[in-house]
Length: 391
Ligand SMILES: *Cc1c(COP(=O)(O)O)cnc(C)c1O
Image (cartoon, rainbow, N blue to C red; front, side, top):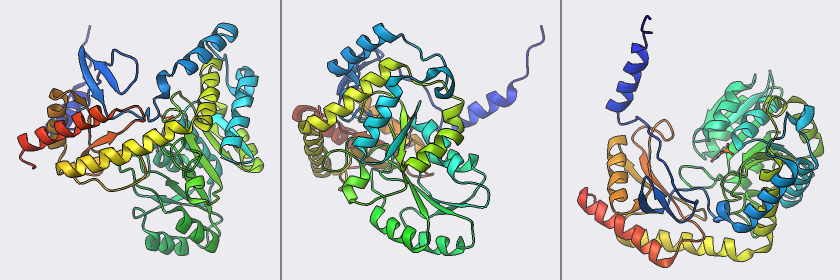
């Protein structure tokens, strides 16, 4: 047998290793919670997206297993062929009601929602204006669209306006942005974006992945937080909601168009009923149990303050994403390894997820973290910071 020549792949892998950008998978061996077991070691979890701790909530598990027993584990086809069920329709109604929109469409993930929505709505002759720190799935959506993309500087409204002016002659303009930036935890200035959109006759597509279940009085997301209306809100069930799947919410007309044109909706097998039942239950809990969001908010403040006291400055913001900037990829990886030795699990975030020289530890706090756990995290940061000569 002739050995296939994959030396080009080996070379690329070695290059990644040399630059500190090689990625490895870590294996969790426990239920997702604020403390987990990873490869035989008990650790504090401060990097998961399970903000409200709902991923292992007994009520969701009961709902999912009951539904799975009754309706099976697979949906058998895409929504437009054999995969659609009353579960999917019920969830879409539930989302529309939760987001206070006319209609919603459910996708199998947030990633698929983003690529499907952008490529279906922004067409040949249109221009997409995209924040430079948008999530990869929004970027991929822009790449799949036949529209031209203009990237504006991060949350820079002057730059956005300049580009909207340049795009005046285009058929349509779509402003695309994360509402909560996933690696920085800061917010897009939606009221200002809305003003510009109105002035230049543009549509707004917002990715509410890290805002749904978190921002706003009732956890409805960024539009509730800012009290503004946008054209399409996209979201995921995989973060605060604790399950999986994605959605887009907006007017009847746009959702109807998406059902007919979004390729990641048309050519993807529908979510299984068990997951959907758990998702509906989760949204009910978020709406009914205000104490969950309140605990999360109080923990965000506590961790921000205590890390600041430790000597690591964290920007004050109302989201559970607290990035600690380290710099070079290798250094961030070393920091993360040190933290792990102190029993704290927070992997380094490196390029291409974040720009060069902006590698970081992306801390995320959960509603269920205790005071003692928050103190342990700060102690680990202190010890690590001292060891690495940063404090
Ligand atoms: C996680 C995330 C997504 C993707 O959602 P999935 O359901 O995991 O596919 C999209 N956008 C942002 C901003 C995210 O953080």
